[in-house]
Image (cartoon, rainbow, N blue to C red; front, side):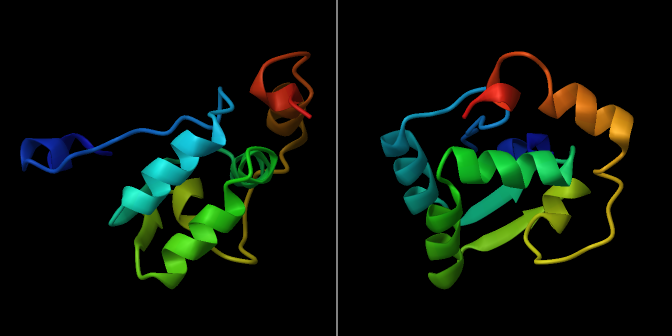
Length: 108
């Protein structure tokens, strides 16, 4: 999703919250410095759950309030809304990810 931006000279920084729990200082620095926040696709419920677990919700809300463009594709587009139609609760996919015995999915 970001290759075309890079080709045009846009600085792109990635913040992986799906597989890691970055330090709060990294989250704050990247979100505070962003003009655009683009979220990739995947499982909407997993993404939003991770945002809560890594305390990303308030920094994202502050970014929205200062006019940062919030966008994405597929689940990355839907995660910005309070409600949407999603297949994120597919029992097989959700169970495998959320009940995986370790890693980010099991972080408390």
